[in-house]
Amino acid sequence: MSGTMTITLNVWRQRDRNSEGRFALYTLPNVSPDMSFLEMLDLLNLDLVRKGEEAIAFDHDCREGICGTCSLYINGRAHGPLKGVTACQLHMRTFHDGDSITIEPWRAKPFPVIRDLVVDRSAFDRIMAAGGFVSVRTGGAPDANTIPIPKPVAEEAMDAAACIGCGACVAACKNGSAMLFVAAKVSQLALLPQGHAERARRVESMVAQMDAEGFGACSNTYACEAECPKQISVTHIARLNSEYLRANLT
Amino acid sequence: MNKIASFTTSSVGRKLLMGLTGFFLCSFLLVHLYLNLFLLKQDRGSTFDSYADFMATYPLIRPLEIILFAGFLLHAFVGVWLWIANRLARPVRYAVNRPSENSTLSSRTAFWTGTFVLIFLVIHVNTFFVSSRFFPSGISMYERVCEAFQSPLYVSFYLVALAFLAYHLKHGVQSAFQTFGLKRKKYETLITATALVFWLMLPIAFAVLPLYFLLAH
Image: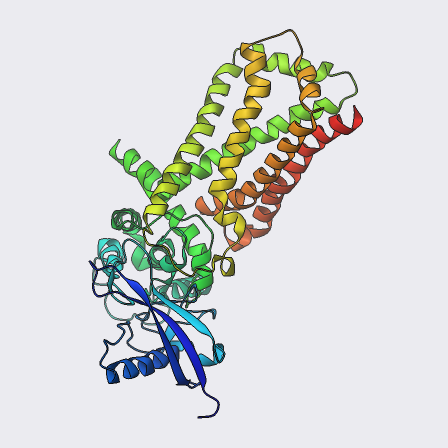
C-alpha cells in the first residue's frame, strides 16, 4: 500500500492496578497518515486479536475532542505533540514513516492504572462532588439579560467551562497537581451570580478534597496550560488562589 | 485555630506561605543592597561601617534579625515540605518525558536553585555575620568585606550564587504574584517589570561589589 507508514510502538501494558506493568514493543505497518491516533491503536488491536493476543485497553468515547475521555501520554507529552488537541484529534500525519512512539498512561498517585493505558480518574468526580455545583435549583435558562452579566465576565466563565476534565493538566504537571482542573471549576462558578453565594465554602471544600486525593501542589510552571486541550488559562489558578485567600481571611 | 491549621497545611495555603516569605525575603534583599552600595563610597568604608555598627548595636534590630531568620527558615521548610509532597504525587515517573516543551527550566528547578542559594547563605552568613557578631577580632566589617572580596575563589562562588539567586527569582517573583491571585492581564506589565528588577537588576547590582573589590584593589 503506497503512502502508508510503519510505526514502532512502545506501549505500557499492565493487567490490573495491583500488577507490575511493563513496556511492550509492536511494529505496525500500513498506518495511514489520515488515521487518528486512536484509529491507529484500533488497527494495532485488530492485529493483536487476530494473533490471539490481548488487545490494548485505552479510554475513548466521543472521538471528537469534546468528552475528555482519551488520556494518553504520547512521546513524553499529554495528548501528544500538538497544542490544543486531545489524543483522539491527533492524526498520524503528525508522525513520519519509521517513527518510534512511546505511549504511557497518565502518571499520578490519584490516577491509578486500572489496565494498560486506562487510569481511574474518579478523584476528579469526588472533587466535583465536594463543591463543584450550585446547591439550589436555579431554574431553566433565564431570558437574555434578565441577570446582567458583563460580556468579558461571561466570556471568561465560558472559557473556564470549556474544561473537559481529561486530566492532561495533572499528567503534564511535574507535581501531578490538579490545580488547573479545580481552578476552572471554581472560577467558572465564582464568576457567575448563581455561584456567588457558595464561593467560599466551594473553594475550601474542593481544595481540601484535591489535597485528600493526593494531588501535588502548583509550582506555577504552567505546563498544565501548555498541554490543556481546551487551552484553559492559568489566570483561573490565580483566581482560585485569591478565592481561597478571601475564603480564609473573611 | 482549626481554620488556621487547615489553611497552613493545605497545598494552596503552603504556596501562599512560600509567596509571603518570598516577598519578605525580597524586601530584605533591597535593604541589604542599599547598605552594600555604601561600600562603593570613597571614604575607606567609614559610612558602611557606621551602618554595620548600627545594625549590630541598635536594640530594635535584634527582633528584626530573628524575624528575618524565621522568614528564611519558614521559606526553606515549606519549600522542602511541598517538594516531598509533590514527589509523592507521582510515585511512578514517565519513561519518556519532554517538560522543556511546556515549561521553563527556571520554573522546574526552583527547588534546586533555592537549595544552592541556601548553602551559599550558610557560608555567607558565617563569613560576615557570625564571625563579626560572635567572634569579634577588632577588624571592621569593611575590612572583612575587602578581605573576602579579594579572594578570587570566594568572589567566583559569590557570583555563581548570585546567578542561582537570579534564576530562582526569575521564577519565584512572578510565581508569588500568581499565588496571591494578582497575575491578571491588566497587571502583566507591572508584574513583569517588578520581576525584572528583582531577578535581573538586583543580582547584577550585588555582583558589581565583589568585582569592584577584586579588580580595583
